[in-house]
Length: 119
Image (cartoon, one colour):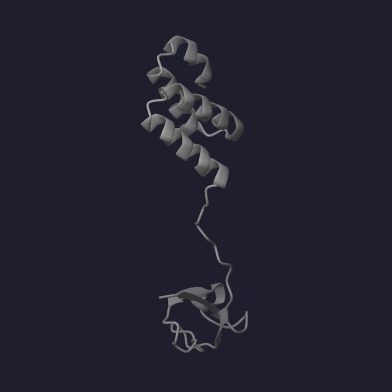
């Protein structure tokens, strides 16, 4: 059910709710409100900005993550580590950087020499 916004038709008339504006759940096929449900004043429907919370992962990022996963499945730890390391340097992705360090350790690299990468 969509949320619609309403506010007072005239900025000097109305209650606190309709002067500041309020939101209400309404069915898509319901008629818009014409009076404030709190004070009975004349109100108008307000067109609001759509704020989306969808975040897409760039195609290159998905490709790298899938490739790293393939290397890990095949036990090619150094390949996975090198790819993750290079891409994390470029994108500043801390999760990918930690994954690279983990894969370096699995590949047999000395953890002391990897300490310089941890920040």
